[in-house]
Length: 72
Image (tube, rainbow, N blue to C red):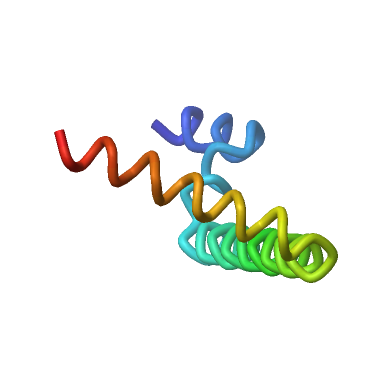
């Protein structure tokens, strides 16, 4: 049994099961997700500011399509 533990420590299996590292990995993933959402929101906001008429037309078209689908 000791040989299996020693071998798994060398291969990094035990590190993958470490709660501290798992917590760090989750925290990093959440941080990256937040940054991605922030970047997407900024890009969308910039697009809407640059092309308000096109965005309004798109919103109206989308509303029309949703209304047609729901009314069936």
